[in-house]
Image (cartoon, rainbow, N blue to C red; front, side, top):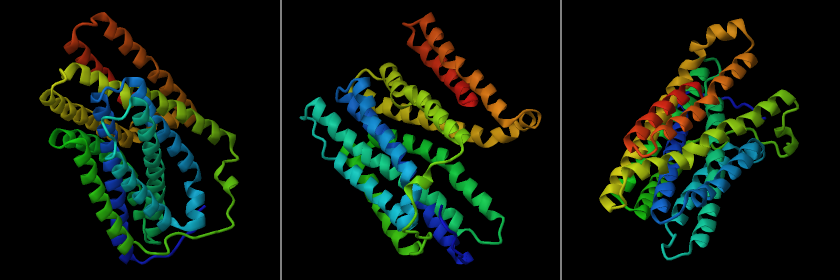
Length: 343
């Protein structure tokens, strides 16, 4: 949808700034998940109420992801990139206004709204960064593929580090101070990006139609729908269930115990996402022989069949000795690493 623009190699610097912007955002996005989840759990939110906090975030992300390319074509990548960063800064600062004296309902509604803004900002920034990399790449240079791979491949590592930073910030500071620190970092990145990134990034087409964002290939649409269920199934346990399960084992509710638990939970989730990213990078080589003998569609179906029994196995293993917390913790970690491989 986006047209191409010719840039000189001097724009390697601009590429680096775009990458730093993307990394900074993904760090704060991962950290914010940890901060919101653990902080509001300590305040007394139950798992369902915590899940509601992320509901609008995910839905807003889906809507934004669907329309971000159309917006970039109408207004330019600069506008969508800077808008994403600004919305994230606003989201962080708004969350500092949450008052512990508010009712649970008022807190849930307010945080859902703020998380919705964060969901919009995430997909605006992600789309803009990936598109900007393609536009800033030298014309006659095979580095384009490596650049795009580096940016997208680093996403999981950086997001994993974000979970670690979220746990670390809660270990070192309180909730509000952590949010202010992240907003200051993003503000600095925004100013640097505004000064250095080319002002004419992307071809603007005011006549582009919103209907063009939809694929006319039904197989692509079915694949997109299946990905909703795939990642939704993962997030059922990953976004809320797993951190709270770990917290129930690692913390006795005291301030010192909470800090220790926050740090360990953030560290494990960071480790899992980074391992997941490494496996994702290696997988094309590992299944190359399978794809050469079968269609990629059949290979994907086979791996899906391998994947779905794993959570069921974990469920029954946890029923073997439900009162042995150390056993359940070790079994969960082992099975989730296996899940990571097949996922």
